[in-house]
Length: 316
Image 1 (cartoon, rainbow, N blue to C red):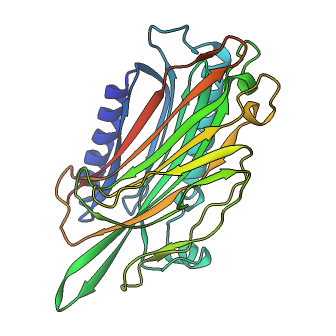
Image 2 (image 1 turned 90 degrees about the vertical axis):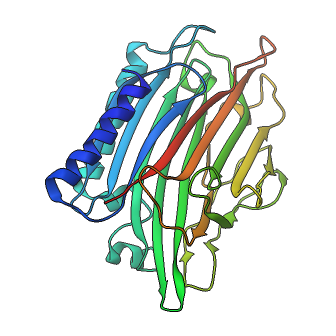
């Protein structure tokens, strides 16, 4: 099916849940965009009794630039991962997110007033490589009798880039460039607070930590930890446009370089806040992830593949 069809099915599921339960809570729901034509081969959607959605979309590139990866092995991989995600989501939404019920939040070291807004997993298969991202968006409302209430939003994303040379026997594509963006300024215009990791870094490094914002107790004890090799990280975050942006590039791009043949994972996180009240279909945050891959044997670079998840608000 198309991304448009998948978007319509997920939006309809949220509307049916509200009609059937009469829920008066705001619900987050995701919608997808892509820079290239994609075919959706796997879709699962679950929403628990508290109105917390969890969804998986597995897709392949179907554009004209090269052959598609809709081979039986790739499609089977998407179906298998969709089944795994659904099993975790239906068992307990907290198993696939950094935000959940009070017990799990406290156990994770988070403020117990944080609640899950939406969690999702996206897997995009191309001939050049595979992008897989888990995203969780949570919210925390701070009430002050003397001030308008402040709503804090937190976004945690686990991003995995697997180059084609590691995924397929017929691909010579290595890691090249990657990008992750948490954009709060394009919709509800929440103000970007803290994000992690910060700053520019080159070479082998590791990061771990947490982020916090404001004086309202809106702190997230989630952090990132990874040890990529021969990677340059560029922090292009923009406080004016309220976007947290990270770019990664791999070096050297050599045929015999093992570092660029292996998958890498990154776990960026961010916080934003607003005094505005979300309205129907407001865009809370846009999570944009993209990558291209390099074939050192042929000396060519793949197209840049960009996949966007928009977390929107469904009002009671």
